[in-house]
Length: 179
Image (cartoon, rainbow, N blue to C red; front, side, top):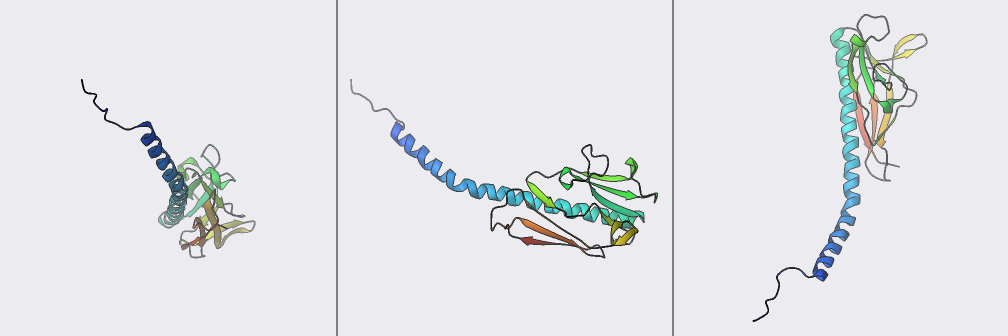
């Protein structure tokens, strides 16, 4: 009876194929990781723009002041850490205090993104859409500048965004590179 040769791959062929696949994966993984970081920064940038534009539109629509502030842990009031999320609320009754009915939107925090707000405690808009800030003497028209970047920012990668809100409430975003 003649012996038939078995069809299939030998162990050596299989090991060579796995080795080549591992090398290709090792080359592609850093690029894929950087792509994920860039996507997170882009998503967070779009979310921040939408949040600021919502607050401005609510101020004009409701003919009252509207504010974007960092959220507290329970997402029911303003806090002090911008990385905990944000609240958009309007002061429709003009008393300067938030009520649950005045909270328009709760924005969940973004993973993998670092926000640098400096001394900004809240970003506000008046009934004409101008950017305003609370000062000890009252509310004044103001400019705001802040930035965000990927939490792990590879040097030279374009994962930094600088936001500028001018006195009339217009937002501009500038793309920058990680230091």
